[in-house]
Image (cartoon, rainbow, N blue to C red; front, side, top):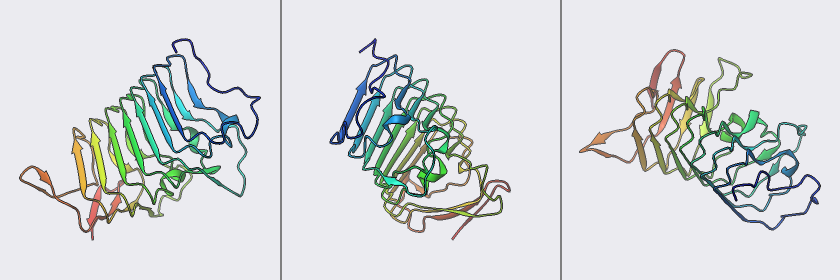
Length: 234
């Protein structure tokens, strides 16, 4: 598929692909955006998304041109795998996810995107109560997992709740400083495995290490003020 530069056509019907539940894209080196704005209501049944080895992909979801409404539609997306996307700059572009909810996400894997500076917009991160597995590696420009919301109150404490998250792996994220740039609380009571490797700048996430093995975290609630670089665990 070396010459494929688009998957969808703007004139497709509203109910086109309404039964599509799995999408796998491999070695399509001219694709730049996977889901442009006109696909916003056309992948509601999609459960699994895998994109690998696509050299030109810059954005996965680009709904920046869609006006926001009071109601947010739920997506059925359970699993995202992004591997070998060397020009990826955003998974969700410009925090436009006030339009759609990704609250059914259970597993997210990102590997080999050196220009990706963050993974989740704040609006997506606030809905991830079903997330169980998070694996981010080889994204050398990533500074935070959740993008800093410049419109938020600097004195407000944001609470991220991940009640089902049990496995987190962060590897070779050389610029990663924090989970989120503002004052925040992490609640992940089900966490069993936290693996951090080659993340030398990371602050604010701690674990207990014994005999080179990560212990299950029982009290995994952390309050982090990244401006003051203080950590209180309770």
